[in-house]
Image (cartoon, rainbow, N blue to C red; front, side):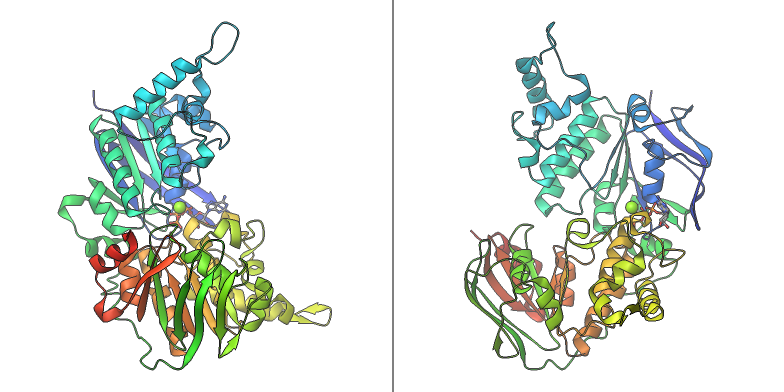
Length: 497
Ligand SMILES: Nc1ncnc2c1ncn2[C@@H]1O[C@H](COP(=O)(O)OP(=O)(O)OP(=O)(O)O)[C@@H](O)[C@H]1O
Ligand SMILES: [Mg+2]
């Protein structure tokens, strides 16, 4: 019998938001159903209901026609549902095999784990999917991509019939995405029900059979992937045609004098890196995840120690002792990892946005509350952050909206920025807002600010940057102007041995 999953009239509210409003659709076994929609549309909320993390206010989840009431994630697992999130849920200090069989470890009569049996079972499973992972490796030592694969193996081992993915590719390289997609297709062909959430349009077309579009908590459309195109999808998602994002950009035409000169920069992580950035220029950094792009900007920003080489800004040698110094000088760095380096999750949007300028919002012992609120309102407006109020704590925002708060913080009108560094700024951001982020970058450039734009999405760096620097293994392997950039050219440099 073919399995199927149904959502029937599901509704869920949080204070001030109706996250899901009467959602009904069916996802069949043997198919990948993509779930798409703008930031805050309700995708993750629906998956959390499916996994038993939260309860719906109304409506039902049915599996093979029978209603399931999950009181906890464990209930969901027993009913063969697994949801794979971007943040890993494995035990880093345990081995691959222990993680995969965690709740079902084979034990002998003394209660000891039968390691040989465990290893054999794991090997068998990994071989079935052609995964080159050692059962004895500690999970914490694997790359993000392999950790994710271990998680998928765990779901498979539990005999999950329904496997849902919430933005699984956000931190994966192209090569790893290919492996993941192969795995997903294998699961699909075994008849599993697959739900797939992503903001990357190209992926939706590569991996899905059907598409469900959510907007403001409502289901606006379901489509058959083969019968639609990217434009139609975006129009359904955003509610209007956003046109050609890059062709419509208002770029800076007047690049000024040299702002930043990096000469033979060497740190613990990068080697002999040299480049220049002019005022009003957008300099893209491309390369594979881990190529050293983040490490270059960390050194400029005073986080990583400079071993040798010079960082020259406006003709003066600079070596910031801390990021505080860098900020005071006029450098803004919007970090890649919003959880680790950025957001204070249990503080409000307002507190997060105003954090770097708090000192200047002080009037004696008082805080300029009005200006503070105004800055936060600006961020919400500029990036269409979906929230009832700026006092909402950021942990309650959807993933993409959290990313927007970080952008809002580092691009606020009170920061006197000379150099703006954006590290993967559009990660998890929906297509509509991406266009706004690109225009924001151009607006900074038009204001004479130098922008460093790091991104793993090739199309994005190629189309937004005036010049593109490519890195590989901590070194710069090439540089080109936008007019001469091609995908093949960048990839060749990114993978150069
Ligand atoms: N625990 C919570 N408390 C309050 N509001 C919440 C909570 N969780 C989600 N929300 C709100 O519900 C709405 C839907 O959020 P959800 O995370 O489902 O969006 P999403 O479609 O996954 O967006 P994204 O693409 O940004 O990940 C948002 O407005 C969000 O702020
Ligand atoms: Mg989400």
